[in-house]
Image (cartoon, rainbow, N blue to C red; front, side):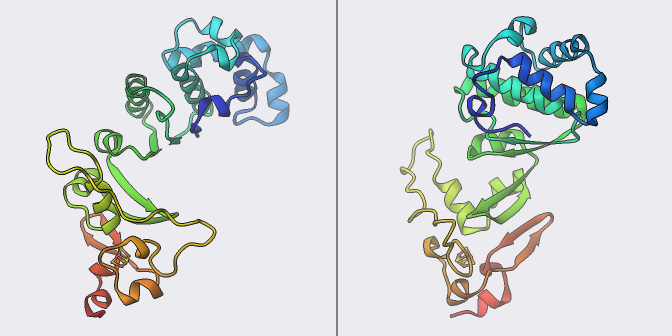
Length: 240
Ligand code: SF4
């Protein structure tokens, strides 16, 4: 997993060397196996790992503390750590949020290249609709901890069905003019006291009586396109 904020994910009081070597020593190995690897071997793997995420001068970086590196460099180090175990599946939690847009684009390019060169799948957790549209193949729209809608990316952006997805897409400001986006009314619920039935119901313009009582089923409405909303069920259509 690549954690969200690289500054918090790395320990500020140890140099990168200690943190990366520790991960390499123990990744996928028993305690006995880990003890047998020499520090020289570990260091060689560390240098190679930093090179793979396109970090220049890996030897110098190993001696640095996290605070001495830029946000983009720290993010690359976290990616290098996540790759040590040779994963088939990587979870990247907001991998560019703490970075400026140009560095964010470089990190996303790096992740995209990993998909191609290593054949791994990446689950990207993000609030950035532009990033989702340009980098992913399938989207799961989450609301208050539940999946509201899922579809291949192109279909979801062309024909969003869940009122929350529609609200999200309508909230994006358009550079081409038109009305200023209004956003979705209300606020996200307290996660310790989520609304009954459909969790989106207090904010939904199409709310029906059934929505407040029971969680909507997740129904298939097209090829690989599913939505959790009563508007697409017979029960919802018959509701007053
Ligand atoms: S189930 Fe009801 S409240 Fe929930 S999104 Fe659909 S219409 Fe709105």
